[in-house]
Length: 196
Image 1 (spheres, one colour):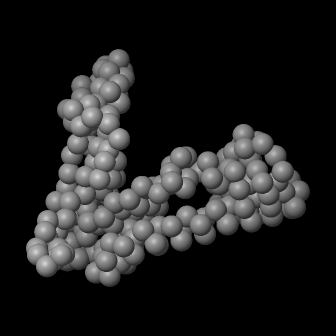
Image 2 (spheres, rainbow, N blue to C red; image 1 turned 45 degrees about the horizontal axis):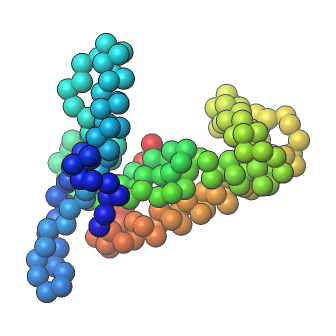
């Protein structure tokens, strides 16, 4: 595995997952996180300019699990397998945890930008216009209690094209998450899902 830069220029952290039996021997499975030291220091400087005292930085999957830790405090919750899906603009992060313990993490190169591109193709417009359209639909839907069709009075053909494109992009993303999650192993198949 390569990280694409000199390791001395990166901040590298890891989480030990489980022991696994591979190639005839017991091995320790590890999830590694790496980021450019320059990126980390840029974030620290930004926080200092905001008059904040930095006491620690966590990799996104670890921070996300910490945010939901309060949901897994009961006896037996450590046996709950949860799929966390964080859809960003450039990509999606999928994580599987047993209770609060991270067991699997993958970055998937499908995100909001891809939804915008699909909507742009369906509506024959620029990606920026498609993005604005998608954001407006989200806003209208939240104001209408989740009903996009009740919220927007623009043409139904435009809505149908946008919804169809979003549906296609979501199906592609769901397929990608399922494919990547399946590689985590059958005992790690989620029983719950959190969209972050």
